[in-house]
Length: 324
Image (cartoon, rainbow, N blue to C red; front, top):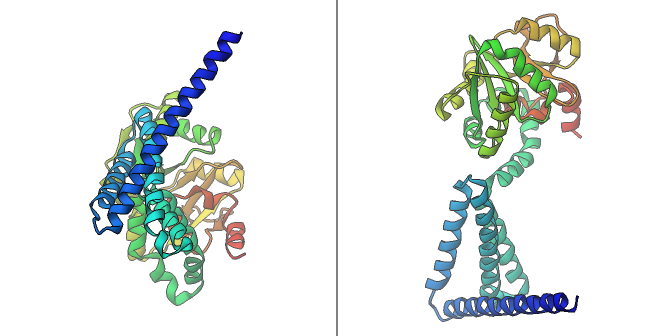
């Protein structure tokens, strides 16, 4: 008993000594970089920034899970080191300026390592302006056809999988059983295509493929990024031909959803949801059914960005939320 306690005490002492040694080395390194900067030598500071940015870019492009975990730890260590360096570099300008410099460094490096969070935040901040533009008739048609919609498709890094029509029922059942899957299921003429909203995470695609395999869905054919973006951009081309994005409507009531699924009209899109499947379709493809309008200002995000969170409750309720 005493031997184990002594061994643990020695282990803690060694760990503390190593931590103190490494901490001292890091502090000496920070001091050297800051002093060199103040003496007019910017090379060490540039080297710190170059090494940090290079590591962050490598980490962002690395999808292998074990290596990604290691790179994630090292990346955050480099971010903290660089932010501390910038804190002391800006310290002569005042304590507030130093902490601002440190905060800006952390935010900037984090955006380089994982830009999806910043992109989603900017999109959220722009939503009120987008909704306001949709409420003004003179701006409505022009705001939906902006080039930003095309660029947003590519930034989402979505993947498309061609599903044989014989497995259509299997996919529909999968969407019912797993409402949180970031997918949507669309008919394009004679093709049934499953769109996976990966946001750059390859593991999301692997999870969806595994779920399809569990449902015995076979002969799946992935499409290239070029073909995926071209297919997702079809609503914009339709708009130029006179078919407005606002012509698409959503079915929520279960009976209506099931009837439209039986018809399976062209350009139907099925979204999974905890409250039941949501079906988006042009009114002319399902006339007379109990359909609701998509929320104004969100049509592009639903049809182009395949944002399933915007069709949770239906157009009327979401539109009411977006104006509160």
